Length: 92
Image (cartoon, rainbow, N blue to C red; front, side):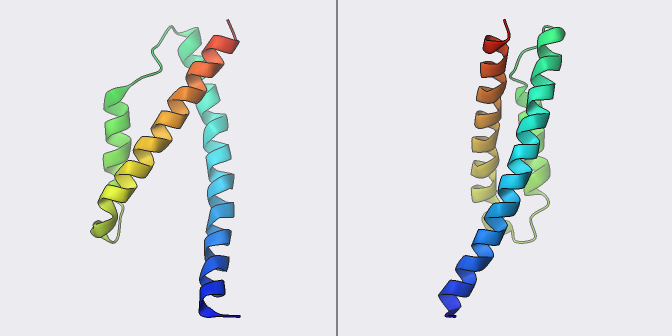
């Protein structure tokens, strides 16, 4: 096995774990969406989004990745809001 193939296997294993975690997060986001619907709350909570991004960026061991991690979480938040919005529309 070449060095490149080893790196790619590492990435594949990481991707599988990310998939498991994103699915878990999506299921929890649906619960949050149902709660928000029951309590007439908005999907968007900008201050919470900002806090989540800041908290996770602060966990980085290598600060050079701050822009990428910020972008990753911003994209993740967009997907999660879209998921909640679709849930609220479908359960009317």
